[in-house]
Figure 1 (cartoon, helix red, strand yellow):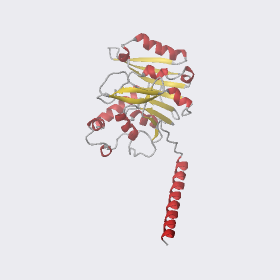
Figure 2 (cartoon, helix red, strand yellow):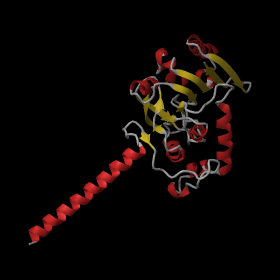
Figure 3 (tube, rainbow, N blue to C red):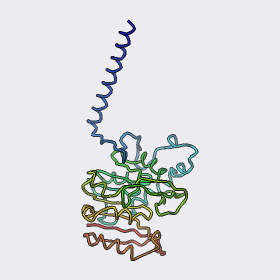
Figure 4 (tube, rainbow, N blue to C red):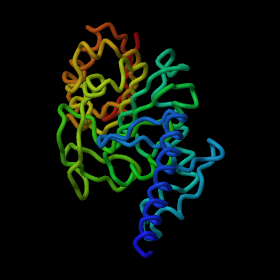
Length: 276
């Protein structure tokens, strides 16, 4: 008798497990959920903001002892950075249009990601190597996003990331506070794996890794990019104007129209815009 009961119990457990599996597969197929690869996370089940201008209180989801994260979530700081992120990377026709595929290098806490979708972007891929900011990016990003907890660089592999003490600023350029190893991918990788076939808008704010990132994309794939908005950290390259000019010249030869906006009077930082 005991043996029969055990068999019946096992049968019921298997039946329930099968039903749950079928329901799960059905939900995935109906919602069009992408596969979850080890390289990146498809953030489709996270709680989001009820209003795009008001960030929900994430303090319940973040350690109370993590003062850096608490500081990042101050409403006035979020509002200030939302405005800055919107204006810095847009110049005339060099902007985001409905249906655009956007690649966001330097995703930070997700402000630009959210704004890109609000402009009608069909797909946004964000890279953010800093583990502190990536936690917030994962919470803040639109659920359709593809997120890489990694840096864009000249090759697929690993690099040392040096943490900054303020909101943004972590770099692979060998300056800052503590450091740790992060994964790196190339822009070519996005094309080679079929994640994208084009980039309508490429946003770049990666604290001195600009040359590394563009070494990781061939001229052939650059021809598939339409607009670029970039924060160019000239100070990281000893304010070498010839190096910046050669960078611009490469894109001009590929048919881009450039525009340079100089910030401040110390030649430390510029905004570079490229459009076709």
